[in-house]
Length: 467
Ligand code: PXG
Image (tube, rainbow, N blue to C red; front, side):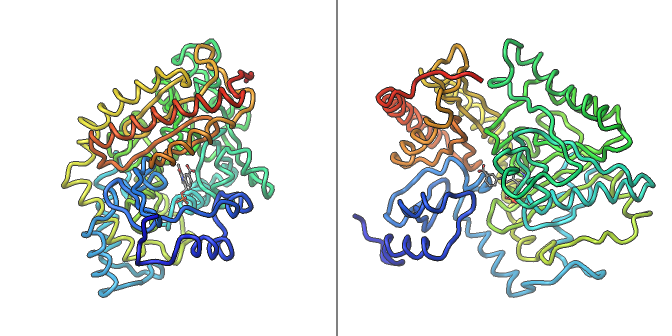
């Protein structure tokens, strides 16, 4: 075992972690049997663990470390800001230079007339803001009955009560009596699993039209907004058919409802444009941002609103009784600004669009040919493969969720972080990943698929179930 001197032994840290730390989205009993993997440092796209292993992080942390790890400029800016003004609030008619500069920069980068930002500490609380914001918007316009928000099955918008209610994750709703009232969920554009005999284009239209049906069912006079991710991330990188977003946009334009586009994952270069809204031709009234806004170096998010929404607040909204202690935190704002400078000046988004995303697309498609894979799909630098016992039938496993974890473990075993969502394997690497690192990623994934197929065959898991 390699010895790393600057921290306690792995087993000691694991024991303390097990004794005192409750982990998010974790089966604590299962974790404590094996002990947590302990990450001690990182540089570029590589993590180092407490055993001295160097691991390629194909998830950019949790979809957030867009500029890669270990940028000294970010640390310098944070230290400078902590000395100058470590904290001040943005309530009570006060502001500070960093939040002003960041709000202006976000207005410049986001499409259309999304010009004003309400800041949060992450994506969940930004989406909670959105729920209160759209209801306040309509109430201010004399339409207090417009409270209902339409969201999607298998969408992910965060873990707070409001955000988890917007999300369409059945397992989350099952714990604690969610969703909260006046939120409902329509179909997702998941052709591979739900498209049946329809072509992707036909299915994209059909899935989008469930929005019109739901607005009709509820009565347009009761609907405040529709919320969706351009590409569902946590749901398993569900890339919508080309017909989907134009039809959703048409339906939103034809009705008096607000369109909230959750760009927490797709924002800041992930899809090969600054925002997924540009990639998919969407015109949001409100955009949720977080993660890539600071590349995860500081917790910060926000709701960016259009002039139409902002005007109501500026003219007749009165006081919006909502805010977080850390709304527009100066250190987080300074670090986010530096992150945006790096993304901008180093042409990182352009490099994704013209070089690394096309290269990953070509190499990722090779995985689609593997006998264990039913589909390989990609949008910019986020991608998924569907594991299946029968590719031609797009069949699920008889025991759903039995094979994805095996593949995940083989990836980890070969120093690659690739996540599983059920039997889907997904990636979302730092946007600074090089072509050589993409080669390592895909070659390792290929090896993991071979080993997974051998294990699944040996354990009799290659049996098809039905949807
Ligand atoms: N919206 C979207 C689209 C997200 O992906 C959130 C909101 C919530 O953001 P915060 O910052 O409050 O976590 C997210 C977060 C996963 C995973 O397992 C995904 C997220 C968070 C944790 C785990 O893929 N996305």
